[in-house]
Image (cartoon, rainbow, N blue to C red):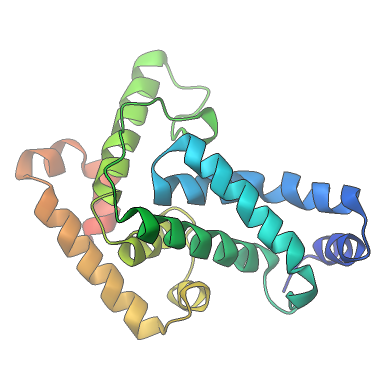
Length: 199
């Protein structure tokens, strides 16, 4: 169930309170942007997609069910929008040479520069692997391993079943394993092992 404060903001935004909706955007912008980036692989496109997702959410606030997690509802809108974008561009290859935005960095601000560089390189490599997955598999992996959603929550977001999500994640891990040679798995075990392990 959603935090009562979020519900108040939603109700106020429905009544036309722009500041209430601004609070919603501020509270969830990182989560929405990160999801869009992991799915689309391009920071500029992710920013556009996140903005459009918030606009769609704003236009559909009256349809939101307060018994449901607002974050899950919002990420459902964002993920559907990104999937539509991916299908339209038919998985066009995206450059991974661009720097990862600070909000996406897996590195802690307390890490030394060398450690931060290693973390960012791992993040780039994982993003490159994600971009090779079909969009539905990519979304399942992102929701499970970046957002730590349960299988049932992922099923709700993707309008699927828990067993179908488990199967999709299993196949996604197999596909990722096929794309990673033995030496890469050894050197990046800290990052990749969670995806390679069983359910």
